Image (tube, rainbow over all chains, first blue to last red; front, top):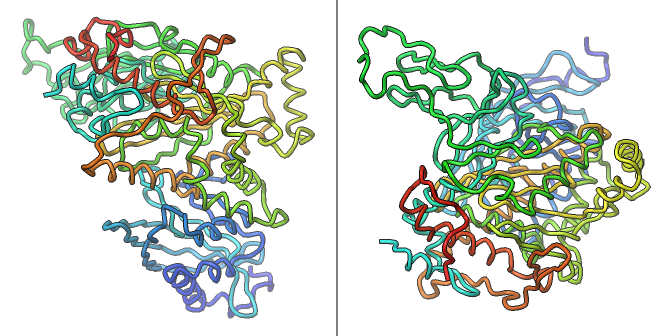
Length: 166
Length: 457
């Protein structure tokens, strides 16, 4: 059962969905500093390699950032010689199938969603389809993201570099 | 028509013609004369520990499978049914008791022998040339310290001779395990770029590019507040990004050695002070203790004193021992390349070292890495740029004429650490393979000696 650490209102699916859409919108508008501000100090941002991958420590990942690496990642994206993003990609995130787990985990709201990211850069469009898992902490102005996992359906495929925020 | 002379003319002192990277006919010849003859690394025997375990991969453009035999050895078979030609196995890896073709059910043993043919009466009987064929075995397979190599050529130098002094780079990797053995662990990740396969082999011994290609991740890492939260992954990643921005004199002073066959390695880049938190790092202290227990203090010190960074075994391997990383290069087309990337666990070493190797792999091989993505971007820009007329030559002349013979190991060494000696050496081997008359006449099943060819000059 909800141990009371998470207010019932914070579990509301439409409130959670609105937050995920806001996160997606910040990425697509390339407001990466504001996006980073949505994340907690002990956050993880994770794109696993393998379907159902158990952990990021014993198997490699496409991306596995703790807070320190995520700050570095965002700072790099603002650098004029971030070649893989010069010119930058245009991205469009579509968030769908949002479902809130009935039980919070460690006072965090567990949210599952499907995400399709369209990327346009250098005359090419690519699609990244994945299942997302967010762990959200209620905050005075909404939520903070403690954990975001994106399981791309083609994570083990022969992908060109993925320099964007998924 | 690519005559021997025209091919030889592509490689000149200090420059290479762009056709070597862009021409589809040259690529076809590379698949025949280089990937059709050289020893190619396919994987490591720890990937197939039990009888029936297999992995599928490619040799050049040809589908093959590496399978553990009931008797214990590893065989490399063409992944091609003897009947009508379907692959008999489509998974990247797995375990089977036999291979069954999906088309008409022909069934093969782990050694490729044809075991069963459904509805046999209708097939041509004695005298039909295809009647009793099994899965064909790749002409030659050899294993060096667990690394499985195969060659599509029936004859040629032994693997031992082919590797030459690069054997010591594999030794360096395996010797670093207190138990004297390593295993592939942590998954096999892949990435691709729309550029020529040679770019990545050149780049891994290119010491000038980091501060330019990786300028953004170097700057971002240098500005990173070290007190921010990390679970260890960020620690490893940020340190490596900063190391790419090492001062000029470090790059100029390091060693680049090259060997016969296009191979080469970089030394003196990292030492343990830069790789681990410090030499008093408890994990490193524990590791050193285990190494000394296993090998004795003197031998342990000797093993750990080797500061070799990237090693290249031409034409399909790039690896480095200190973090147990290996990449296999798979050319797809003149302008398309796929890399399979591996991490090794040093058996008997502290588990935390493996976690650091995984964290390191994410930074250097992760498809979403802030470091790797800039390398891949530049490979693609090279391929695009080489389409331009006006200057048809690629400059490989940095340090030309200043290479020196290292009397210590008998290898040629760049006069400085930023010489383009490795590119020149790779192209020397490239021209040898590509203008080898024996190889050209015999194709992939020929009987001549690869790598021993008439010099391109």
